Image 1 (tube, helix red, strand yellow):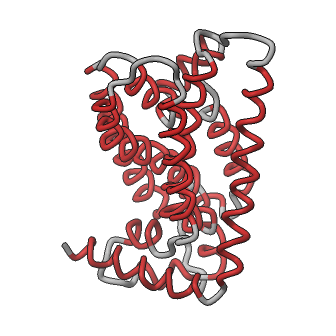
Image 2 (cartoon, helix red, strand yellow):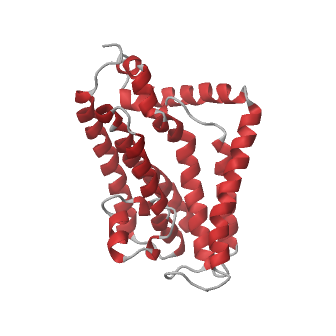
Image 3 (cartoon, rainbow, N blue to C red):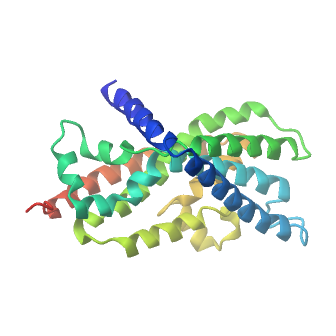
Amino acid sequence: MKHLSLIWTFFKASAISDLEYRMNIVVKIATDIIWYVAQLSVFEVLFTHTHSIAGWDLGATRVFMGVLFLVDAFYMLIFSENLDKFSEKIRKGDLDLLLAKPVNAQFMLSFQRMTVAYLGNILIAFSYLIYALTSLGRAVNYWQLLFLLLAVPSALGIVYGIRFFFSASALIFTRAENINYVWHQFYRLGTRPDAVYPAWLRYGILTVVPVGFIASVPARLILEPPNPILIFGMIFLSVLFVYISTRFWKFALRFYASASS
């Protein structure tokens, strides 16, 4: 309950801070709408020349993109600003203050600053997902949307675990911008349906660095009959990668030298 109370406090403080610059919220939402349009236009153009890409038709791909936008919006709301500025906090000595507080430092680093503007993105993403489902042209079991209650948090857990792992490497290397660049390349692989990749790469993004669980697997849970293996696989990988990130955090702290020392 203490941690939930802290998350709510962080959210309120972040909202107050963001609302001081309302135009910045509008600009962020507008910028992401442009990103959404750019991502969608790629597939919309491709499907004017073909009916299917690796078994994904236009309707299924729209559902995939809707799920991707939804997971991405939640990630950007909660974790993005915190993890993107991880290296900066180490260089400026802000980490020293967090380590001295009577709360888990990894928790503080992960939730301290939220970007409330992305609440609008969540609404846009969910609206687009509903549009994609209604325009499929075939019967949809809307009860399967309940799988999103498992799939979205699980996908967030996987993304968070991988991203925190890369961010925490700054404790060892101090300046980890190039390593973070590697993370963004992995994340980009998850923004396309996994079936479009060759078998070896598809295996990698579903097991080793499971960015395929960001949107490809959740979309299948909605579009296809329920698959218990995928459901439990998502939950397992989410718990596993959060655990790995925690263990790596404790390991990397051994290399940390206080900015004031």
